[in-house]
Length: 536
Ligand SMILES: Nc1ncnc2c1ncn2[C@@H]1O[C@H](COP(=O)(O)OP(=O)(O)OP(=O)(O)O)[C@@H](O)[C@H]1O
Image (cartoon, rainbow, N blue to C red):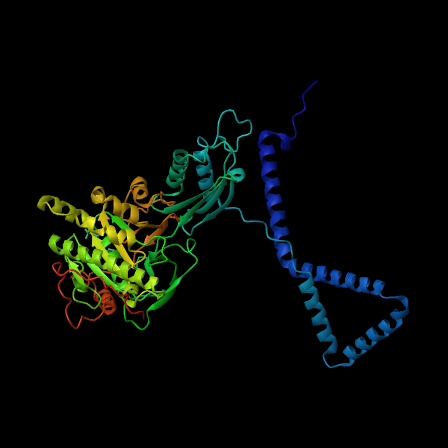
């Protein structure tokens, strides 16, 4: 039997042609339907609204008791009559009904939740894949993290910044992950930092109960805060500024050029350190790399302390960074040489003892502490390791040994000690200094271990790529480690200081003392009063 040829439409070319035509006509139909929907959308909305209005009317009619339907009908007829007779009445009635229908008929379906675009989902998938070796074990029959798995199951929340990089991420991890081990945590944190983008600061919040890790990218701390009068109570000093999530309080601060009438005001969260008789961390140790800003921190504290107290400065650095304080009201001495340092610290020891005796006598007499024991005395000691070295060479006493009494008993006598040292001079610090300085500041670049050696705990944030001067961490006692930016308080006598900063610091200095302070003379021992000093 002769084979009949296939119809042309079913041959290979024909099939291809038919498919193309089919696809084209489908596309045409879809476009026509989309255009029709766009054009007819107002009509659809109106008809939906009218339907809702009509059904509401029917419902109302059905709900009206039979005996009241007559009066209701009469009322409606009256309204219709009034509207029909009023000028533009029918037109206004139609417009009102249409407006009500348009309002009722509007589309109220909630918008579908936004899915991150493709590049973002790819980033999340990369993060997920990178975590698989850390959050999975071969014995797990249903692993949360698996090669080829889906990130949606593991990442419960995510946010992206304006540059399209991950800004926040909350992820779940299996309960068998050893989240109590610092090494295991550090490995995961390292991977996340590398994959989510280096050069930014991250905070890792491990919730061991819920097996959740919250990764937050922190914005840089403001580095443009210049020295100024901070709104604090007596006994409070501002070490610097930190993240809003870390502290409850904010301080109103001025930004911009000093003295500019248009300078900006902003509220910034501070790290406030309380000193004096009620303080739990009455003394402070600041450690940093050379040039990281420890002297600037001491200058900033001196300017704040001079508002209510006296400040004795002993500077082992010997670069004259505190010269602006010499001879000012409330500054008994600024010492840069070993003999002067020894003499002034001996005086500070005796002054602490004098205060303690006077306070005790007053207490025994049932009086409040005398006024001259209540004025805070600050001892700022910069680079004690230099003096320790010089004392060894000269076979003299280490000035730090003279800090024992102020450090041990200073709290009761309103005496505060602040010591600043560089990392490579830490070995030279005496045990008494280490034990009694419970407020700690670590400035400048440092490894997590170095920072932990100063702070007693590792910072919960990764270090920034570039540490500006005055940037670091602060920890008060056993409290949390805060990120810290010290306010810009440069040496006003330094040529590199800008005019605005110079004026800002000079304006905070107390006036020059009318009478220069008497040189501290140890041959004249200070007498401890036998009688209680008259109470204020
Ligand atoms: N908080 C800050 N804001 C802006 N600049 C700062 C800050 N702290 C320090 N600087 C700048 O960094 C430089 C070094 O500061 P500083 O002298 O305080 O450091 P240091 O740690 O005492 O170093 P060194 O012991 O070597 O003097 C100075 O030019 C100073 O102006």
